[in-house]
Amino acid sequence: MEFQISIENFEGPMDLLLHLVKETKLDIYEIKMSEIIDKYLDYIHSLQTLNIDISSSFLVMAASLIHLKSKKLIGKVEEDESDEYDITSEEDLKNKIVLYEQYKELTKDFENLHQKREEIHTKLPENLKKYESNYEIFNESGLTSIDLFKALEEVLSRMHYKEPKNTKITRREISVASRKVWIRKKLEEKEKCDFFELFEENTKEYIIATFLAILEMSKESMLKITQENTFDKIWIWRI
Image 1: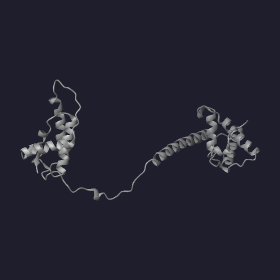
Image 2: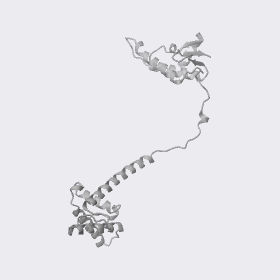
Image 3: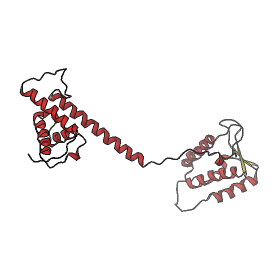
Image 4: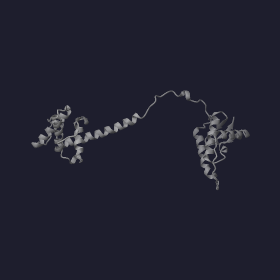
């Protein structure tokens, strides 16, 4: 029997046995283990004939397989508790090969996870207080950013009802700066106005630009946002 494989290609004797099993292209429980044992022993013998150094673990496995084969020849198939060899039967050998294959597949999964983890770069935590802003755009009555976003959602929900029946699509850029100018003029006319008064058009671009303009102007102390009680109107005040 000619072998085209090298002992360095295998991590151990179980790896070689698994290779010999896969060569048959049959389910392991359909294979006669005596054939696999013969292939293993022939392979070890061919290496010895070529004076190739063989790891002791491969020789120990060979001794175990020879012992198992001899037990079959003399018809001694029952397990002996005093048996010094690890492999006690063909069924035991099959189970060990199956278990080794499962461990090997699991190792591949861990290797893939390790490779993915190598692609992740972490950064040590640092103190971000220097980036913290002490400015609070909301009043002490309990108005929060959630309240503002709920108000924005209500503005967006009203868009459908304000849509004209006949529309003509035109492209018009609306900047946050232009909305700030408009809001400032609006607040010059009266001291305060309802939040919804600032949204005269019902396009998404207009609404988003207006909302960002309100936030920026509040941060720049150009206006004040208040709400007396929960669910009350949100008022925009001139400063």
